Length: 316
Image 1: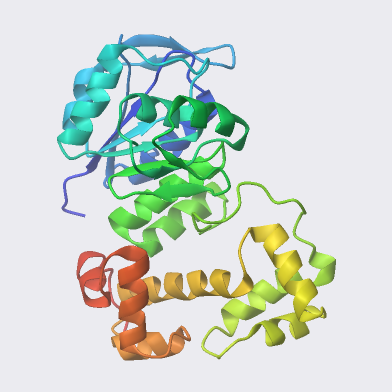
Image 2 (image 1 turned 90 degrees about the horizontal axis):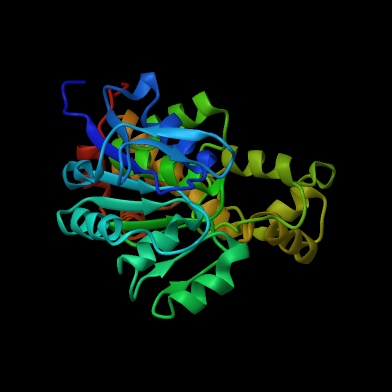
């Protein structure tokens, strides 16, 4: 690719949650990503770090690598006591030097103890929400979402939500097409927005047509879709459709569809020579002005700037 790999350091705090650490390793440390990412595992004391699942994790590097990392990932750990002062200081210094710092699950407790989340929105595993609020009253906790992007500081909910957060980081770094490739390699959902609920009260009710309706909506996103059209396709009344959709995804059908439209716009900006107006029409967003508004609000960028920074090999 001819670019310097993005440096990612995962910090293994004693009694690390091995699953959380493996998420970062699979996404950033996989052999297919070595041109894009340089991935290391570090700890306060290099060597074997105990995990919560009965085996040790090797951390070859010390805290000094956090000072040169572009991104720092903090997996969960137990018990939820404050990490050592040296660890907290290293996290604070990494953030001050401009590193993007992200936590998986209860790794947010380390970010909170380091003062990195004060005054910010954040999330963590829903089971630890009360303990988090008591420990960090200055943090605006939202335990109902998958992940929260507060700019340079990001937090995710429990376990698999860490996958969604790390794919979100890949999307930021290299665009939607690369993130989709990584997701396909891992056989996980290509994109779940951060605002989706941490846990669904019901499995996706294929018999009621929601899964098929979601696929249909994506294929028809160039149209002016409404709740009435979607509910009719699903064979449900509009009220029942919206209620069941919220039970499954934690959001309204229109909000979900808006996210899918924006994701498709990102893909087209990366991979085609279509004009911004043409992309907006294909995605059902209407106009270039509307697309600029949505991208500015959701991604903090413009279509032109996004295309310039995430350009793939363009198709005719």
